[in-house]
Image (cartoon, rainbow, N blue to C red):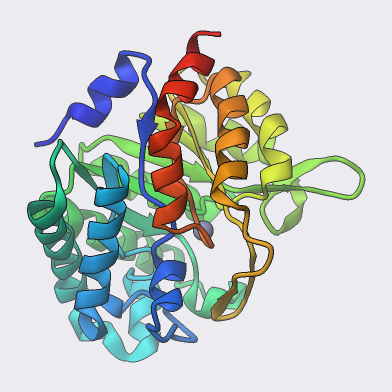
Length: 307
Ligand SMILES: [Zn+2]
């Protein structure tokens, strides 16, 4: 069990995690599946998965997140991998562990990613409620059994499906990171990612009482983040994280357009830390260069913390 990440946060220090995984695999030439996105890359391109983890560890990440975002039965079965759910989850944790063995010179924790995304990111594709909860329980149980240090829930962007995923993650007894996403509408509202009628505040009000260990604002546009931090702070006294996206998605591929330069991400991150954020990393569109820049800027980030 690797608890250095928690000691860092409990001590009020800044914790650096990794950057984008699926998009970084795509950038390195791994094809993205129309239904499961990068969810089967552990089977099809294991070396790329391991090398990406290694590069994030060398860049300074103290937590790496497994490539299982698109790997629940809900996503993998319709993509043709229904009999390999266990192999994907066990393989993902094993590749993360190998990367740590190969590259880590300090404590590195392994977070198991689970999303509540439907196949092909198509909201008509969710399983029935019972089967959906079973799919999250299967993923969470496999990740826990394979030895992850925590569960990272990602893209918890509404309340029904996300609550099922959160229930399944909490049932493992592991620490659970709640990952929400947001954007700012033309009229200035902070809404939950692509749900124009659902305010981020409503998602936070529904999911925070379930009992996460960390609340992360992830895969969010950078301009919306300062206000999102305030919405979280009003509702949550525990550790807050930010790992933003940069670029944009056209299914199933990321467009690396106007990706924020690493130095600019550092400048933004200094502001987030000053506002109370203690966990920093990157989501879709970010690369090891971003994490390396944040690691190099750690003295400035620590200074912002106490400012
Ligand atoms: Zn993302």
